[in-house]
Length: 637
Image (cartoon, rainbow, N blue to C red; front, side, top):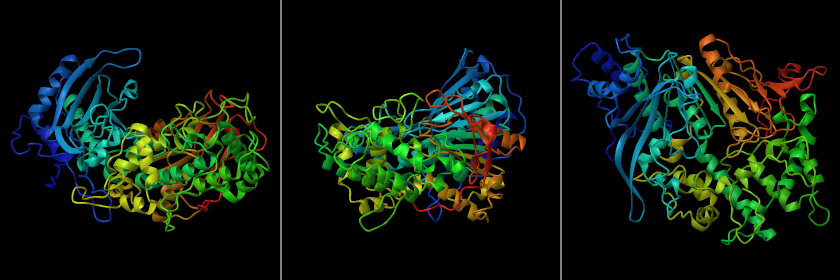
């Protein structure tokens, strides 16, 4: 394999400044490849070229339809984009009620790159597709958006336009519409090609950031004063990645429920599938394809029994029984266990009790994966009401309840199947778009072949794995895959020294219920980051100068659940970066689909938790204070 290095942003921006001054560009050439860069020793990604100093102001046309139309020719002539990149179009977009006037630039990197066959006879052609939007009324800031799932499409890049931000996004190098292969994990088929894994891991983000910064210089004649990155789920992983791989490129970063230990987490998806399959088989629940029907191991009402048990055990730790677990590290398995034991059916299964094998399986899931040899590759789960809390004050926690939050279920189980003639597993953990795609094609080396999407074929592969062998596969390399997926995809380094030296600010918002990712994994990382920065379990002052973690009680993956899940982490990081105002709390509001619409709560920077003052209106955040009543060491669940 020929490994080609990339010319960094500093050189290209210097080239653009030279072009504006009428100098020769013959020596610049933009000779980057946008290809694979080997990770540094120890498995962490190689650091990028440090950010360029802002180019001097340039004389450029004012933003307009004409300057937008001329942008392609101007940038192409200046040769300031990475080699292999191209602008497909630059379109001037008039203002509408939802989108401000802007120049919409789209393009590719390494278009028509031929990748490895995904299955016999199935050739693949790849490209990184990107989009940059340049508002006419620019606020001198740049905001980049991360993706979701396994990516494969450009995310929405209009969200920050109205506020004047130039924005960008990309598909991370594969296209769900054209690169999917039903015999190779569907949309996860790109995992069969090493360069596609690299593009997915970091290169798509890195290339798009460089392109966007060059376009800003060309269109406005100046670099952005501030740059931001935000994302949740896979976008949250990408947000963590830029603090480690592109530490000088972004001033403020917001990471929501990040898959930052992505390949390690995939062992949990495999383990959970196998444990639930045993339970389904014991219950006689089988899909139309002859696969254990994991979706039917728990009804919605069963899960709400668990949610209520968690609240009975842990709700009042914050001084108020309000349907929320605000001190999650106190809510351990030993604390919850008496309430779960009280749910065990003493006779046959009814709507008001759980079978012992249901409780025992749930305990295994919450303990976290254990391989046959005794290894523990990932974390357990926080006990939280969001496993299946109420979505309304009416019909709540009753045997026939229907107003039940389904976010946790959608990942771990999938919808309950009532028509056995068509019953199949629908959980996202077993889907080509998420868990099954990751655990068959993207995380293991070698990847699973075949990994058919039809007839629940990918779940069958997951159920066939030996977990020790699977865990080893995320660290494996071959001639075709010279870097392991763990080294490429897991972004769990606690060395943020370059990011903090750059005065970068990172806000992480972490749902306690979640979906694919364990909140305990994030707590453990943050505690280790604090120790690496010289802190103690009771002193996070140095860490919180640049990085703050906010736990969200009841919240499910990237929103929803019985939670005060509406808050503005992006504005908080902007205020922190530009106004030197570190967020002492995030004020969060409960949306309509909760038992308490309009309720407000403070989300507190870990390890602080929200505590009721004992006298104020319990529905208003001002009646709560952030204090350190919660134990700060990660307890074994």
